[in-house]
Length: 109
Image (cartoon, rainbow, N blue to C red; front, side):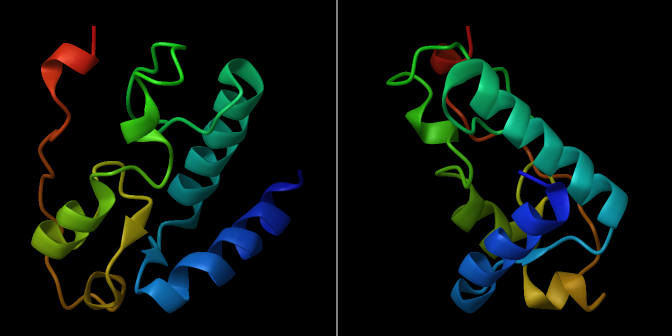
């Protein structure tokens, strides 16, 4: 899939839910390309900022958008990757902050 078409497809799905793409278009396109690569490699779109195990059941929590996006955006204005942000973050009303990893370490290795 062409990256700009993928961007538009996801934007139309997630903006009505209150999740917006980061204003850093280069970052967003890199992350979207990595998502498509993970889909090709693993058969599912694992979060590009986390190490996928290749075990679909083990990785369900990191299918993008991951299970951690909602609490990350609510608390920090951005998800762990910085792909999805709140409207306030996108408008510059929220200062960018470090988003800690929420995933259970036992699922990472």
